[in-house]
Image 1 (spheres, rainbow, N blue to C red):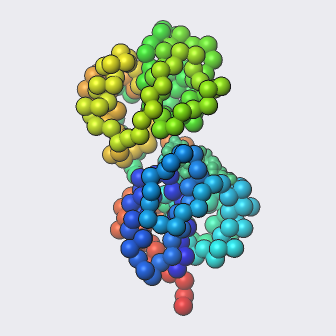
Image 2 (image 1 turned 120 degrees about the vertical axis):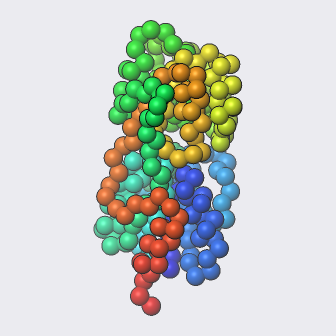
Image 3 (image 1 turned 30 degrees about the vertical axis):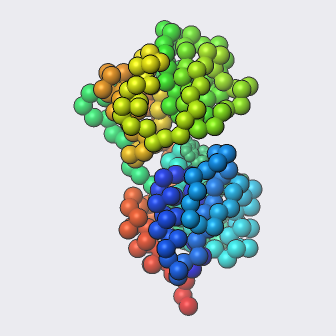
Length: 248
Ligand code: NAP
């Protein structure tokens, strides 16, 4: 059974390690290629876009893919849409492996917004020290004249043409501990955090740190995802694979 895993998330890593131990499955991991040196995973890996829905349809047919598992990050909305459309067009079974979003608890002070431009507006006009914990891809939304000072943390350096005027760039790859995050926020005098509601454990320390330091968080809600079977556990995905084995 040939399986295409759309990656770029910690779930994709968990799945890749599990599938690499299965001699009865031929799995290929696909990465967009955004990160210069992605974490090594034990599956044959292809890197780069497919060329839209048509490109993905061509790939599924050419490679004889039997099933697709969408393990992209919760904010990779376009890839999710393309996968749903290409799988529908080729009648390829598709499921998703993801994590639940974070939910505000006692002591959290969240301003929930729908997208990055709304997050930029939610910062208001009073000058603030903003921890932009959203990666580099949407940092450009915060570019241009602004009363705020930004601390942007990213794995790779962003292109310099679309960055906030007042910027402190921190290049680092997670996971970060609660102590790491508290130390960074204190060192940089942060008074508000901007985060995507990624969910999961790997990146939640910044949210816990904000609560601990009583800082508000502008929390960007997830974009909508297409309807398809969705699992939050490896066991769920493995059972789905078994149920979708092609007839011999
Ligand atoms: P996106 O907006 O949903 O996708 C943009 C285009 O990138 C897609 O149309 C596709 O190009 C290509 N692409 C995306 N994921 C791919 C994959 N796994 N394999 C091959 N091509 C892929 O995605 P994004 O938000 O730019 O994120 C890019 C990657 O980074 C995703 O794989 C995602 O899992 C990961 N990531 C994203 C975030 C985030 O916050 N957005 C955070 C952490 C990791 P074609 O149309 O040419 O096929």
